[in-house]
Length: 121
Image (tube, rainbow, N blue to C red; front, side, top):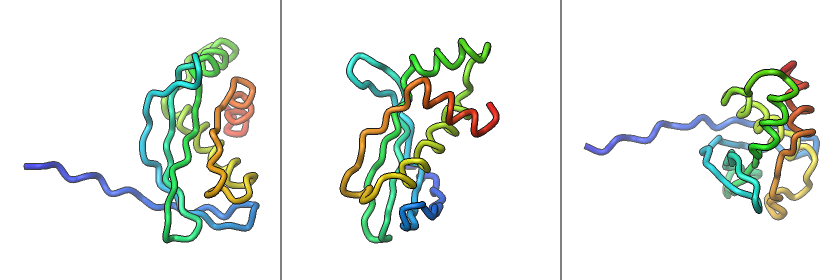
């Protein structure tokens, strides 16, 4: 018997750009940017409720290691996901015509520190 896929919750976000986006967390997967390895957080986004596009947030292992070294502890998977989601919101707020541009978003160590500081981590 085939297993059914877990239904995903569609969430809304009113961005500073004036758009109200609908988004769903789709998956996390291992990825690379050049020689850098890390995790890709894939979100499916819609600005018009008719079409969707994937937006990928890449968090490199070196950024996570750097944060852990300064914090004195490892970053949990939940905390890394929270940083990716914060970076998603930042992109939604800052990038005009996001559906057309589809930027390659990479989180470096400094950005990771800033994102997690907003969460008091």
